[in-house]
Image 1 (cartoon, rainbow, N blue to C red):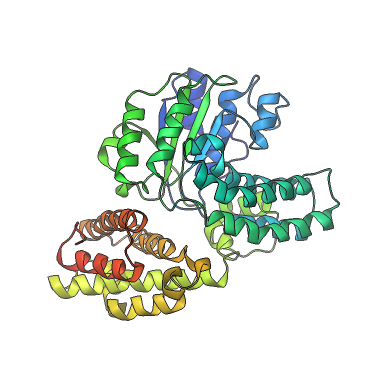
Image 2 (cartoon, rainbow, N blue to C red):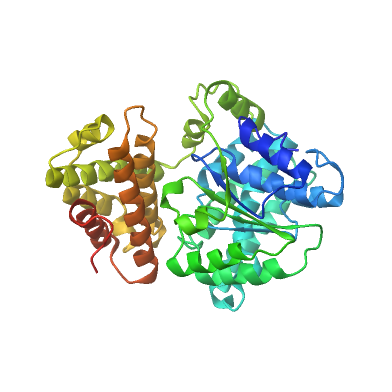
Length: 425
């Protein structure tokens, strides 16, 4: 088992040992940078828990067959996530390296998105689900056409390309933060008897939840069903509340660079002459130009926040912060540029509605990157934690109240500089 997970030997070995000894906890946290195989490992763990044999990757038992195709009834996928890069990569693989493995990669990427719209997650919320169902049906029909043994390679590649805008529209229907109605629906589903041996609930970006959602999840983690395993993933452990952290066992996933990154890119992504520094850098090649622009704006917003805070406190002593402070423009200038580039964060163009969340997440990634600097210390850590707290509060307000994104970004900046931990209403 875990043969398909490359470059995460320590985490995978811990999971193998615990599975073999029957010591796997009921609640796990996979923490690590983006593109570090957290979701792939969680899916592989779900397959191993259901397997009727020895859980090798090519196991022919029906449980494993359904898990590999991401259609098993005993798995639930939830939580916000961006799929655009992975889907674009899969479509490219079907053109440049046609064959069953490339098709399988694309189909699994699409089904990771489709599983966010399982009926079980929308109990008593059918009106919300009905808005997305036409896109879900269109995508599932296209997925079937991309499966090995259906269309020829060229036709399947064209179908995958046709599906990309459909998938993008469907992704825009995903909640920006895990809502409480999905946590409650998940709790009901988790307590039902499994079809096989165990149920697995995977909650991605578990740091991005409304307060009510976190409280409901906490109650579930306190008394989990014996037949269910909960896997939470995060790139920002510092943004998670301590009461949840105290109820999970942590598994650290590392950034894959060098030989381990080359192995992933060549064996999984089917690319040879890639010259990429890491898995994340390679995936970044499949971002749209709008994603790149948001990433740049997010870094500028992080620098502007640090510059504003430095102006209030008299500057920062640690090099990662002082360098960012020196590069910072005014907060107002950065927010104005971001608003202009995104049609006021989608207010006048619905297709840009995803950009505010992307700006907040990208800024968080910029602060998280500072923590990897050898010169980062307690000052840098506190600033990163300050932003994580305010970002979580900002997203709660964005999803719960009718607040203009630009105004919310300004309030976050004020709180970051003058009143750490509190965004004024």
